[in-house]
Length: 110
Length: 109
Image (cartoon, rainbow over all chains, first blue to last red):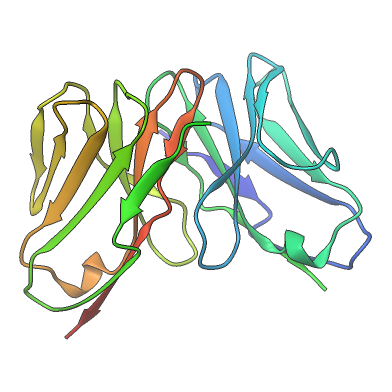
C-alpha cells in the first residue's frame, strides 16, 4: 500500500511569488492535514480537509489556502511568499485516529 | 486552545544509555501517540495508546498513558545511533492531533 506522497520534494521561490504544494493521501483516507515545520521547531497546524471541505484552520494568514479534490488529494497554496514561509510543509492523512505523514516539501523563499 | 508541554526539549546522551521523555497537558485526551522524525523526513508513528493507565512496548520503546489522561511518557532503553531524531508526543483531540514541541535526541557514540 502506497503511503502519503507529497510533491515536489523541494521548491525554491522568490519573495512575493506563489507556491503550490501537493499531497496524495493513503488510499481510503478521507482526511488530509497540513502542517508547517520551521527549522528546528515543532509542528504548526495549518489546515484540515475532510470529504472535500475545510474543517479547521490554524493560526495562519489567509494567504495560506488549499483545497481537497474528489479523489481526496489536496493542494496547499501560499500566496505572496515571505522569507519566513521557508519551512518543511508536511501533509498527513487519517481515517480516524492517528496520522500517517508524508516526507514533506521543503520550501525555500529567497 | 489545547497545548502539550513536552520535556526535555533536547537530550545529549551516550550510546547505550536509557532515555526518558514526557508530555503533560491541561486537557484530557482519549488517545496518546508518540512519533519520531528523522532529518528531512515526516514523523513516523512509534506507539499508540488508547486507554488510561495503558503501558505498551515496541521493542526497546515503552510508553504509558497516564491515569489522569493528561500525560504520557516514552522510554527508550539501551539507545543506539539510529535512535537520533526528534520525538513528538501527540494527543488526539476532538478534531485533530495536538503535538508537543518535540524532544531532540543526540547520541554520542
